[in-house]
Length: 260
Image (cartoon, rainbow, N blue to C red; front, side, top):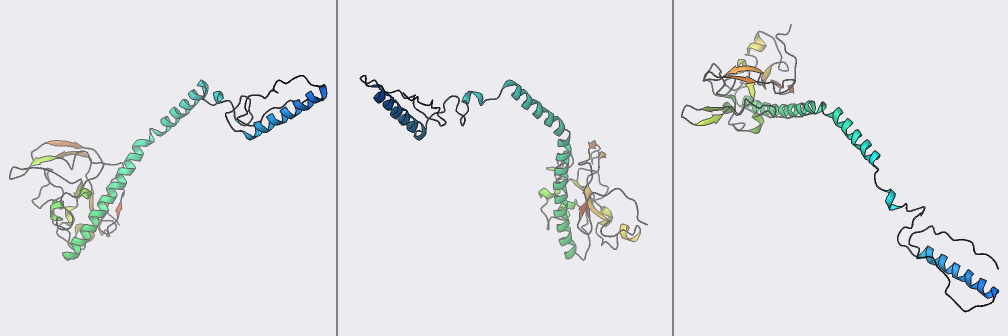
């Protein structure tokens, strides 16, 4: 009697192994023929019927081996901790850079408003004090944001630097008894107040150009006095100070005194 070659399924969903139904005893020849027919039918059913994965299937690994082992999990946690240790020192610098960029955009907006003001006033700059109250200024001119009210709202977000935690929100009492805040993070260059660039100290005596002469900049860091005599510690807003120049560009220049 010829032997039947063992069959190993390579697809999912094979039904339980086929076994020939019991039948009355026959001759050896007819019994062998029946077994071959049943084996062929089982093979066809195994190939044509999809279903669940079977253990040992070459194409569908056992689902029990798909999870993470404890060692793999510990390695993943170690890698994450290492990356965090490398990135944490850089986060403050990234935050400072983002705030400095937003601050520069604010100054650029103010610069556009100043250009409109100058175009309407014979190229003169706004007549204003160097800093709104309650910061001690030494003159009685209006605050810069009030002098520019027709070109930029007094409470415009552009007047506030994202890195400023002290200056713009300083509370004070006005002459009529109302409560107000500074509402501005930037210092105005009073040497330009009420004059044209050509009339300014920077042009006449220092011979600076419009690309070198500042109009507004971040409030300086240090200890400052308010009108009621309080001393307030102010930190620098950024690692590098933003400056708006007469020509309208914003930069972070190194300190200078004069140009030869």
